[in-house]
Image 1 (cartoon, rainbow, N blue to C red):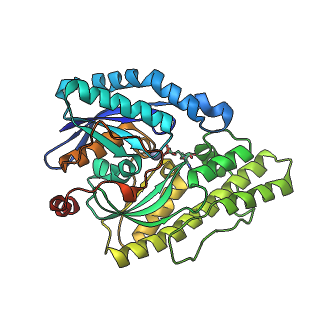
Image 2 (tube, rainbow, N blue to C red; image 1 turned 30 degrees about the vertical axis):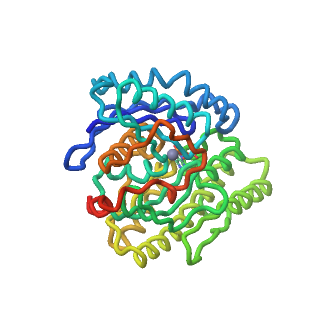
Image 3 (cartoon, rainbow, N blue to C red; image 1 turned 135 degrees about the vertical axis):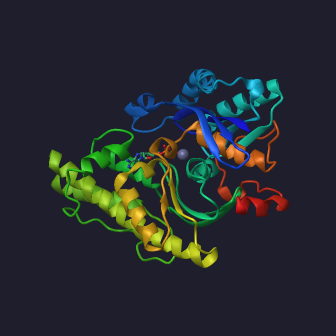
Length: 357
Ligand code: KG4
Ligand code: ZN
């Protein structure tokens, strides 16, 4: 089956055409992403109204390009998937309404995809990872450790009680005057900094759940920066390196606990999978490799372009759902807030096959 996927939850306008073979294997036929970073950079973060308007302006061109690149026309599609939440409501309305219009015009099924489920299932598109696996999802808006047991079947093992990890990177970059988005800029500065120069806390380390807390780390960093201000280039690099090292240590500790919880509740995972923009960070990837290796499993890390927001992951999640008979009506309303626990599961007869797939 061939699905068009549309992504408009935040500041990337994405459309992609993805094929799912009868054997459950995925193939990306096209994947077009337009980042709005330049529209938001001056504000140091995403401005919802600007994002929604930019999606309106770009989306039809992005979809046309995705269809062209894939050499497909609308009547040949098996379905259209759009991210229907969680995310910024203006963008969600744009993407979902467009998907509804295409399905209505061409009499195709609509699949309203949960953006987090799309991140969670990406490893099955890129690496055909079998269920059940443990997912570390870390982006600008989300930080979660999840058991991915099947399509629509998620076990929450931990999450952040305050800031998301990407948000902490972005706030650190803003504090140090580096620009937006902060993750790649902090990572770059960290490569020439001393990670031991500033002593920063490792919040939540040693706790028996897999929760995160990042806001104290951000405050501690600000206090250290104030002590040495005005900041030299080397101070900035050392602060970035110390911050990143603290995050890496926290991620290692929280994931070790998360995997322990996974094993006691589910059994051995087929893999540790990372997703979300933060998974592009090389130091974080390295420690995730180590943590996975320690328990005798491997890290599946999709390429960075598929870890950050894109249409291919939406199309793929749509294909996985359509294969299980899960479609949505034209009355499906976009949801700014949509926890994974509230995603519709396949009917019981399908759950076994989803777990084995
Ligand atoms: O998944 P994503 O593209 O968008 C959502 O937030 O949904 O993630 C973007 C986030 C931003 O906060 C960005 O700073 C962070 O991912 N990020 C990184 C890196 N690249 C992107 N954080 C740390 N290191 C990176 N190399
Ligand atoms: Zn995302």
